[in-house]
Image (cartoon, rainbow, N blue to C red; front, side, top):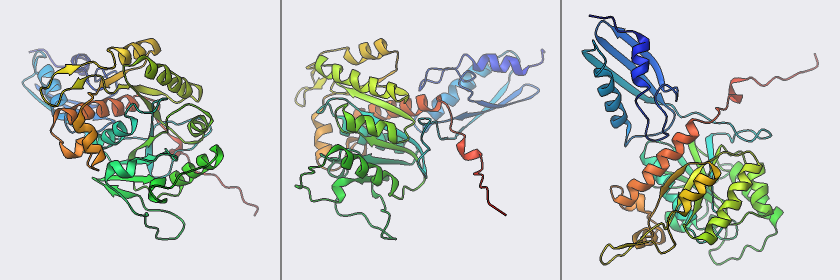
Length: 363
């Protein structure tokens, strides 16, 4: 019987594609160890994103592929998850206690960006990550309502704030600090400074991902935020409608200007589902999100339906992924969330924490 070589095992693993980012296990550097003892092959895989829903499926695919290798009689595959920090804009340093910040933008209001943000955060938490949300919409904060939270955050030192938590998600919003009907009549610099303070002065607790729900638009405030907040990646939310796509294109261009990688495009309200008969109708058109992703050479992360239950759940303070975790909509959110985190895992890692701070003192 021919001896099994490590190269043979690697070549087999090159045929196994991780569905969450589309690369094979070797090209994505997921293979961390290969051990061969006679006819028995053991492999350790490491993935850089949470994937509780699909980890066993990926493991089974690898096992079945290796069992097809001539001479192999037994295979064991272990998969571990290691979520690392990824690079941010060159002039900035990562936020303490937050491995990765993901900005969610739309360019246009009314496309369901905040609803998408909340459900993606819940989806990543369900997949096994520690997740938070920063509500960056100073003028129209909606995260408190969607998460069913109210009241002022606690402060243990009268200087910093503890995030308010719901469904395991750490959150912070200006909505916790002002009355619900109070109008925020602030100029851009004040709003920008307020947001930075909310980010900096919140005691985030060991987050893998912090989603920032950006306000609609691509003006001075949004550009300043994109330049001054250490972001590892961004998601663009749009609808298939042409007018929404135009504004989404501006949002994408904004991140390109500040060298923040766009992880992909999410098409919301892609199909209306009738609550009475279940009939699907493309009210806002079809194919807009895919066309935009192809035009800009970025990934299309997925499409979400215009479903009354998603809206009702958000308004009631119990978003869809929490209200119906095993439902079809929740599965769509989880799929998009995994792809988002998997795409981020392929980007440049942040190694700044490995280097010590050097202090020169007069002696």
